[in-house]
Length: 120
Image (cartoon, rainbow, N blue to C red; front, side):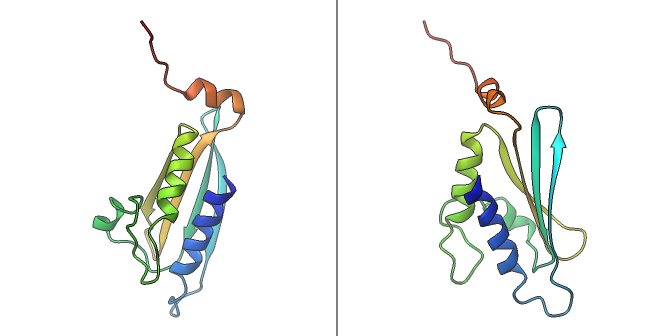
């Protein structure tokens, strides 16, 4: 989880490097989602995202950065999916973007979230 959080924070900071016409604001929130999950939300006031880019952001080797490798968000998605949850992005009403993920609050909820498989 540490890797995911650090990646989202780094991306948010990178997105605000060229934001000179407004305050560089980075907002990190956590909130309860249902009774058994927690959500972490990272919002920035950076350059933002185009809608057509959003569908590819979590693909391996896709990047919007001139010096990016395109693996950070892909790795983050893999980590979150191993916890049987999801990661997503939203376009802000104002400048910037928001990234969020949701995971179980407790270890036993991870086991409950796993899909069951039938054996013959």
